[in-house]
Amino acid sequence: MITTRRGVSIAISIGVLALMALSLATTLATAELDHGQATPDPHGDHAMATPDSSISTGTGVIYLTITNDGDTDDTLLDATTDRAERVEPHETSVEADIGRMTPLDGSLEIPAGASVTLEPAGMHLMLVNLTDDIRLGDRFEVTMTFEEAGEVVVPVIVALDEDDIESDPVMVGDLSIEGVWSRPAPRIDGASGTPVGTAVATPDADDDHQL
Image 1: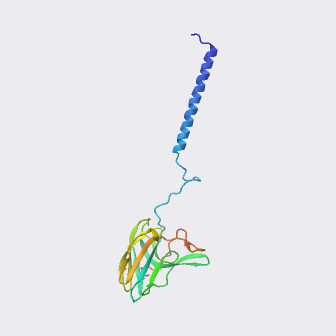
Image 2: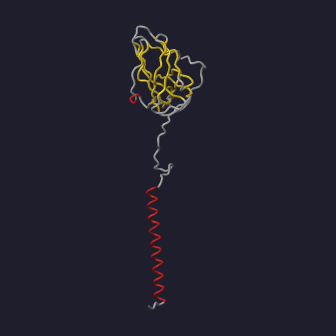
Image 3: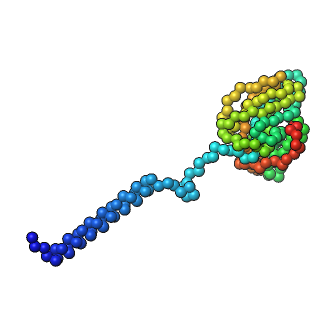
């Protein structure tokens, strides 16, 4: 077979074009595969935030309702837990559009025949200087000492809202303690009194645990 120089040149050109086409196809396929398997940039505009299961903030709060079915007033004298250095009764107040959590002046009184509810944007038990993180679903105990009813250990559930918990009332003397739940101490929106975030630890008070 006789091959002319022109024929050889054409064959070489066709071969080069074929190699270029194959290289382009391989590049496109690789790029499409990389696009399908790409890991999103966590700092990108469309990155999705993943909630951290740890919600500890250094301080926490306990909410509950105490009902006194007796004929004698009672008083919460003391509360302790291994999850915090101190437990103090506090009250949320708003002054000049600034929300504050301040210790109650004196002990927490439970009048006879009445209920006292500790709730968000109101009275609560402050867990000062947490000794361990509190996470959603965690359970721990707080020991409460009442003047009349005496001492009782109350289970606490860490939740985002009271509706997220199910628990039986704890009975001691004439008192019934129910709806007990905890979460980190929130920062307060001064305009609305609504919890909006994280609070810093309250200043240290007395070294004892007296409420």
